[in-house]
Length: 306
Length: 284
Image 1 (tube, chains in turn purple, cyan):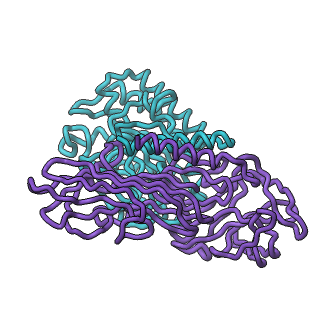
Image 2 (tube, chains in turn red, orange):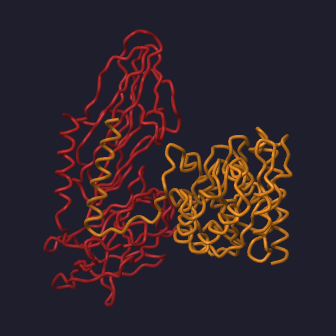
Image 3 (cartoon, one colour):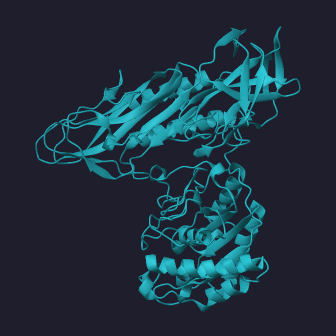
């Protein structure tokens, strides 16, 4: 029953995404591939790749004008401006002969013109170490990215740091624990294994996008007593269950029991994360088994529109 | 299982939607080796670096083959003393400080590639060496040849590194260390030569116009293969293909089960490889 319900949710997401956006193209870490399947870590540049065509709409001071971008137009990050762990908005503008893309500070004010989000004030677009200024409203919002290191971004199963304002797609996410098993019995919420890497991290160019998260892990108590440890999911928090999370409350004894948690909802714009959390029973000691890739035992998985 | 099914469902939906809107297939998908590992990929224990940190005289090592080139557990991990030793991970495109276990290669132990790179930098032959390694233990030359399950690892490693690393290398070198499994399989000289030839064609097609260095390597459970060694020797023409060294001279005392090298065996292999690479550098 649960699986059927999830399937219906997935279909509805599919249907909502299947509408035609007025603007073609997606930001991608791989030239020529609009929706990548493998991890892209350490990206020094992004590409504006054709997707549903290569036409965009850019305001010219009096009206929106359809402009064709050159497929795989590059956005090259630099280590001076694109400092580590920072969000940047991405815009596209008409240079007079071509569509160019670049970054501005995250949260740069936008103004809607006939359904297209433009820059409220003049902006200096950053690309490949140079700034080029464009007048107010004459650039179109393309997306938001987040850096990992200086001059580096990432689009991976663990970190969806390239968010498309248009043509968002459902992207799979997952993280496995770095160890097969660990002990934890305290009645205090924390990251699974106390490891902050156990989370799905993302950035969003707009609010209201869907995030779906599941956690599963095997737990064994150190005695024959029945106790109630839990796994949980935190949205942008590690000390509280996400509101609306579905959690198992199964009693655990000295035989392995799978504990699960799930959460489906929407997230705001900017950077965020879904944390894989655990809380021990507060008595005895619980052994947690995550298994790792390909074992099917446990980890945090999910999907996000991005 | 439910979690897996749900994930598969959403991946399938996402892929369907992406294809419906004209996204080309991802060129960096490698053939799955499940249930075996596609390569060591524990990035959380690594230090990611920007490609701009690779400066001075820059080498690109493309390394593959079987266990002794692929982080075998028989060898303790080695951490280079030089920060110029870097590791490109074909599984993600990331660039990291080089340290065993090297990302991309199969096992979770140590090896000779990081040691060779460290020696070359210590002795001022280079300032930065990017090790692009993707060998898998227990594999045969036929698996790396065209049609083999490992063949597209060569293409992905070569093309992905060329595309995502904004580094102009002064030199690139392909280092191949394979033969122990073919010894056990009884692969003929002709078959091994055909496999090597196919691997070379794949490298060329992928755009790796680098000199190739081949190790004489066949020692498995205490015995060598004259057929495999003959094929390896025959490939060396000192024009396009050069010797990496005779790894079979590293004896059983430096191996586990007289096959996979220990740390001392890896150090010996590194010294042999270092000597041959320096000879090449001096002549070219």
